[in-house]
Length: 256
Image (cartoon, rainbow, N blue to C red; front, side, top):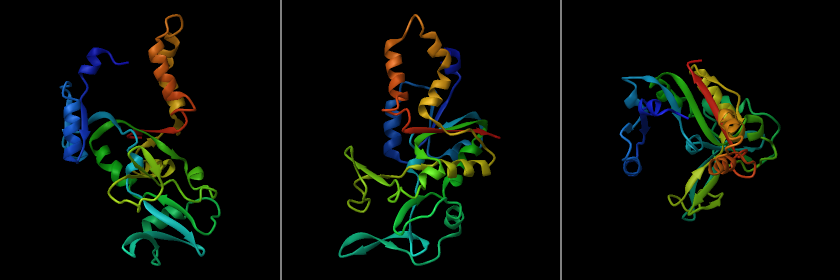
């Protein structure tokens, strides 16, 4: 828990390129004076400072490629038009070098028709954040797995999901522009990309393990004088049936 003096010394910078969302953030955080609203992390590069870059459920919103194992090799799935409707179409062309590099490291033997997702943009995403920091941490809570679990041969339809009006589905072509599209995070790929830029990734932990470690002193202080409301909130964040094991935390030091 930060002291009042420590909190007063902090500045919270929010890079948000979408004007509508930035306006909502400005309204929500109007009572806080130490908040800076930016269009891009690049706006911080001229005056880098020590700090923490973090984003809750941000990595799973980054763009990804959909790929399918068919006839003994990987194909990228492209979107085509057929009978006035969008459909998936396998690209017969060779994969891009960036995709091919990642796919050569995938474990296991895959059945025909196995479909999954690959992100090649982690390094491009991390680089401007690192340029804005002289030192510090990067913290990414999100849904996802390490590589062996993510690309398990039994996970034949990948992790791509859509959400609209709090309802989940799996076909992103059914109502384009009317739903959010996401896929889980390959934390191995994210960690390796950050490591290539000079970060030192910590071991991946569940949200439960990560928060319990951070809250050790607070939890010990609950003996005798428990904060009932605070403990209930903590249990929601750490319980295996809620968010405790569904979320993982990728934490990285910068520089290594």
